[in-house]
Length: 156
Length: 161
Image 1 (spheres, rainbow over the protein chains, first blue to last red):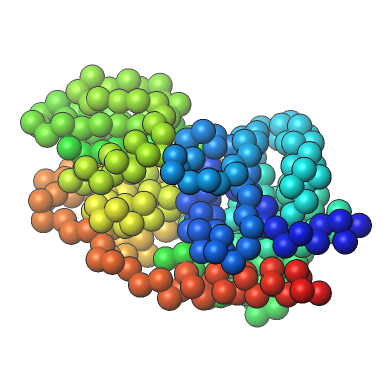
Image 2: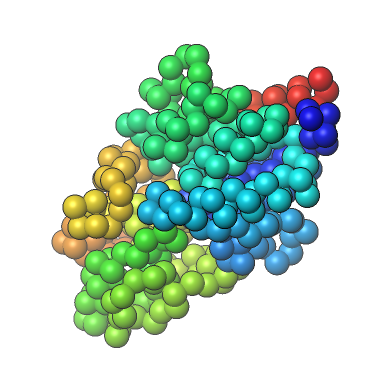
């Protein structure tokens, strides 16, 4: 199974808004080094016209509409088998949690960068994935526990 | 022109109303992105959602950008060299799930080019002195590079395994 994902490709997944802006800041730099494809709700508002980027539209799921988690999971599974990412990278929130759980189960590597907006504690979605993702990064030094959650730079 | 944006996830009618009432008394044109809000302003031009290209163009054109205290808009304002005033959503008014925006104001306000308000009065005070607000200077990206290099180190290692 692991071999199937050995494409070097990154699937970058997030909610729209601030999560998406942070994901883009990170991935714009990664694009020079690895193939990157994206999945986000409302991607019709997120596309830069001049860019040749692949952005898949997914359901806009949040803590308020949990029933949509199931169809979202199927959308993501479809994307996984279509794009065969070796790494899933997410800045949150709910779509990232689903992607990390599914990816972990299928043998895809997972990286979580917790949103810089969460200052006093890890985001709720970050706390959900912190024992599942291969790498969990906080953008605040005070939120690192030195083991599972590490502080390594920030988008600002 | 003043650009107002309420974010993507929830409406922020209170901010739109504050800006509508402010615009009624002023000559300065105001444009707002409302999202799914119910309050439709009368003194402010608006759209519910606009494309990223239009959104970026509005930020660039605006003399000042007014927003909920969301990271996306703070980053966009800084990248486009427009000063931003942020006002936090309040969980007790049903404007967000929790008060992380209120908690974030303290450090947001320390960022170059970012101004904060928690009430209508503070927002109007910031607006009053809008001509003196300054945008962020070109930021250094050393912290972003550290983050990207760390992520890259895993992606590269896994690919080479």
